[in-house]
Length: 242
Image: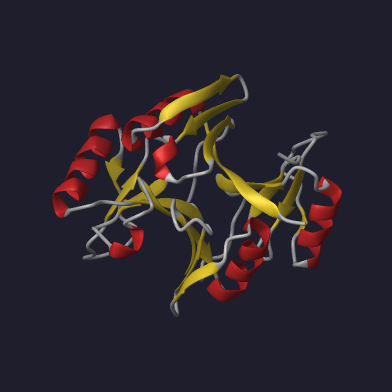
C-alpha cells in the first residue's frame, strides 16, 4: 500500500490570472481549464510529476504562507533574469525580514511568497522549481510523515531543514524548514496525494491516520476524496486511486 504526490494546489481569487502568471514564469503550460480548477503542467523533461492546480476561493490572502516554492537558477545571470521576468509578469519584491541573503524573495500577484535561489548544486536536476518548502516546528518528524505519505525517501538532513526527494532523483525537493510560527487558518497551498491503481482509498486514509493524520473540514462537503491534516495541522487531500 502507498500513496504518491500528485498535485500542489493553490487557492486563488482569480485562478486564471494566477495560473497564467506561473505558467509564463516557469515556462510551463496551462493543461486543464475548468470552472473549478486550472492546472499548470511542466514539460516532460522537467522531472516534475505534479500539477500546479489553481482553485477559486473568495477571500484574498492574509498573513504569511506556511508553504512556498523555491525556484532554481543555473547562474547568477539566470537568477537575475528570473527575478526580472517575475517582476515584469506582476510579482513584487517582498520583505520577510530575511536581511542580506543570496536569494531573492518575491510575492506573486496574489501575494504568495516565493524565492528565486542563487545557483546551488543540490538543485541542478530539479528543473524550474527547486523545492516545495513547508514551515514546521519539527522538520525531522514532519519529514518522516510525508516520506510515508509520498513514498519519497529522506535525502537531505540539516539541523533546520530536512528534505525528501523523488526516487528518480529528478524534479523538486519537498523540504521541511524549521519555523516556530503557529499555523493560523487554512493553508492557501496544500498537497494532494493519491493511492496507486489497485489500492483502496479507505485503506490509505487509515494508514495515514495511523501515522498521525487527522480528519479536516475545510467546507468540502460531499466529495469523492478525503481531506486530512498532517501532524502539524497542514491540510492535504487523499484523492481516488490513479
